[in-house]
Image (cartoon, rainbow, N blue to C red; front, top):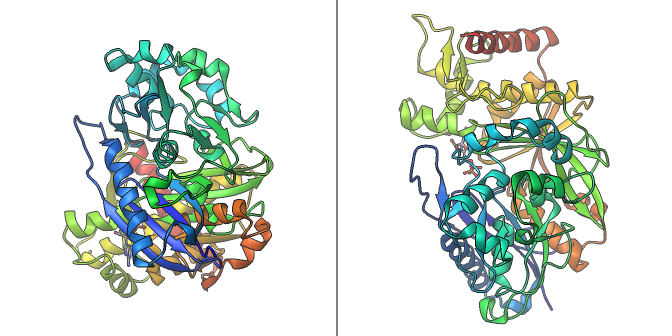
Length: 491
Ligand code: ADP
């Protein structure tokens, strides 16, 4: 009898596979990094074959490690780096160009040309007009790779985000499909009508024949070709990484919010059946679509979270290991006069200031390493508060925050977060929430779980962090951050 759910987690720097049992416990996992290509300043590419082969390698590795065969797998769930854009030949499967990664800024000028449609784009897609999303990357490939526009117009080429590319390969070219969460990050998908938007396709001059069929996040995405994993396995769940984390954190009620602290930080708030349009420059997106019902989410991102600690470690060489930051912060305490604004690559939501650059304020003769390191950790928490304030400004107060990602092993950081936000923070037992979310979707489709309520019951808490700081101190710490931001942005 089949025992496992196989989750394929295709990230920006590495691919992973995790086998889960029917209770959502990790049985075994494998990970493989792959090369990043930077052909010009601001360009970021991946080899499509690396994306596929590294994923396949990890899938085979976890089956080997568990001495499992295809028959042991109930269903496959896929979660992936979002927005990254691939175009390939419908007949041969041959990519026409490398994958253009979400971080790639080459289409900034093209997006400026579309400025006259900016409001309409936001109204239809919930996104802000930006090179980050897939639409301008598709156009760039059609217009800059020899013969591509003509081949696309003749219906010879197809587009996909990474989920679509993986499913295409897993099914040996049988299925050209995506899910609603991934579609909602392309800047071509009308999130209210749940369809590719004919007007936007027309403005951007993108042939509709390029686009995959959009399905519910838990649905039949195809069967793996038997040659690939030694037997046919159904692919039953697909979601973009941040949406998968929302699901893996069991945030199924309106008002529930999760925040993932990895290289960057992504805060995603469940807004239920309402597509709440932000007046604070947050993104409105599809949280998940199950049984044809859309659950929407508001999303805010911070570019530098764990990456700030990496910079303190590798750039400044103030610490030998990221975990040393905790001890130093314990020595410094909360009342740190130093504020660091890690705007190394501009500021994300809610400021969206691409030209801002980082700064450290409040230095004095007695400032030492520990104050600077602590300021790096505190900055992540202050920025999270900026996002929750923006969400509150849009009318939704988060009652509790569920956190995950590599940084949340740092207890000091999570307690400071609780104190700065003034809300309870919960850390789950399984912090691999992205992979877990994809497994939950696959399990829902396969009937392992009957409902989201049943999935929510599986979610397990590791520890809660409650706010302990008096309101006045909380506000004065945050006021110091706002002053630092004000100084930076007014320069
Ligand atoms: P990603 O998935 O984006 O690669 P991870 O979720 O693996 O990132 O998290 C790694 C990040 O967490 C690194 O940027 C690292 O600096 C940071 N990090 C790891 N351990 C700690 C710690 N104990 N305290 C603070 N930051 C940490």
